[in-house]
Length: 76
Image (cartoon, rainbow, N blue to C red; front, side, top):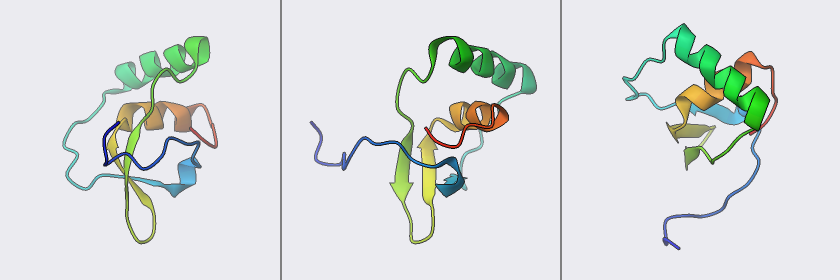
């Protein structure tokens, strides 16, 4: 296991903020597909976040977070 991985855990969506350098935009139809996937299969893999003083910064998984928010999930 990598020395950079601190833990794998469930986190509240309200503790997440998008990475300020994330230039990838997920179109609505892609988020809709991710919503359907989450509904059918649940969350299949972890998102990646980075600690910051106030919130957790999303490094990978912005689309999944958006889809979970659309489903009004409270945690991932």
